[in-house]
Length: 403
Image 1: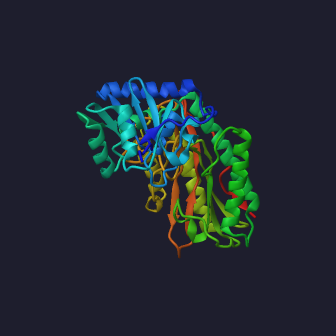
Image 2: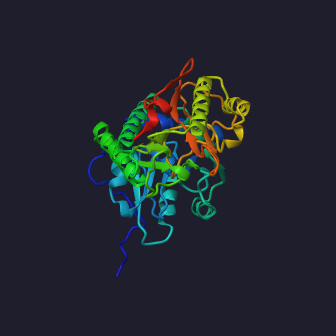
Image 3: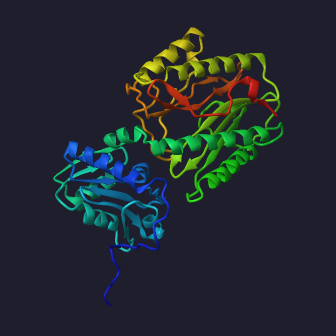
C-alpha cells in the first residue's frame, strides 16, 4: 500500500485570530530583522526560541519536546509547528504557517529547508539552538555560512514600540490588582499557597476583562514568608504565616507572552526594630536607584552608584543579584534580554523607549536580627528626560504591615 502521509503540509484551519498587535506592528518587527540580516549578510534566518518566534509572529509555542521555528527570508515569514497543535499556530501567527508531521524523524528540518532553501547564508540563535539541532540545521540546509543572529534580535527587542509599551503598561496595572488581592488575603494562620492563589486569580480575571481576545496562560505568584524570602525566585510553599513574619509579594501577570512584575516587602501585623531598619534602608536604595534611571546612564554606572549607596551604610554584603532588568516578551521560561540588566558587567546605555525595573534586594542570613529577604520592584519606562514609573502599588512600612 502506498504511504500518502506527508512530511509537512499547510493546515490553515478557520480564520486568523485577533493577535496581540496589528499586522503593521509585526511587519515593522520583521523589517527590522531583515535589516539586521542584510547588515550581517544572512539570506535566511531560522528562529527557534519562544521569545523570538512570539516577537516576530505573535505565536507562543508549547514545545513538549518538539521543535518549533520561524523562518524569515527576504520574501517569506513562516512559522513551523507540530501536527499536535493542528490549526492553532496558523490562527495565532502573523504570516504563513507550515505544519510538520512526526511520522518521519526530522520532518521539522525538512519543513525548515523547504522555506529557507539550501546552500545559503543562514542565521540562527546561538543562545538557544542546541548542538544536536545545529547539526541537523547543517545537514538539512547545507549553509554556505552560518552566523549567530541572536544578539541582533535582542538589541531589537530591548527597544520597545509604542504598542509594546501600551501592553506593558496594562500589565503593570494588572500586577497591582494582584498585589491588592494579596494584601487582603494575608492573615496569620493562612498558608503561602492560599495567598498566592488569591493574587493569581485576581490577575487572571483582570487580564480576561482587559484582553478578551487573548490566550490565558502562565500568570503566577511567588508569595514567600519567613526563611522562604531569602531568594528572589523561591517557590511557594504551604507554610502558615505567623505574626511578625517577613513576607515577599511577587505578582507576575502574563499577557500574550509579555511579562510584568510587582514585588514588595511586607510584614504580618507588626515589624520589629531590626527588620524595620533593613526595610527602610532598602526602600531608600530603591528610591535612589529609580532616580538614576534616565537616558544616557549606563547599566554599569547605575549599579556602581547603588553599590556605593549600600556600602556607605555597611549593607553591600547583603546584596545578592543585579538591580533590575528589561521587560517585554519574557517569563521565567524564556526571553531574558541580558543586554539590558543593571549589573556591573553590562555597559548598555539607557535610551527612551526602553523598559526596565528597579529592584534592589538585601538578604539577611537566618539567625540574625532582621533575618529575611527585603525587595521592592517597580517598572519604569525611559523617557526623553527621565523615566516614568508605571507601578502603582505602594511600597514601604506605612502601607505594607498587613493582616
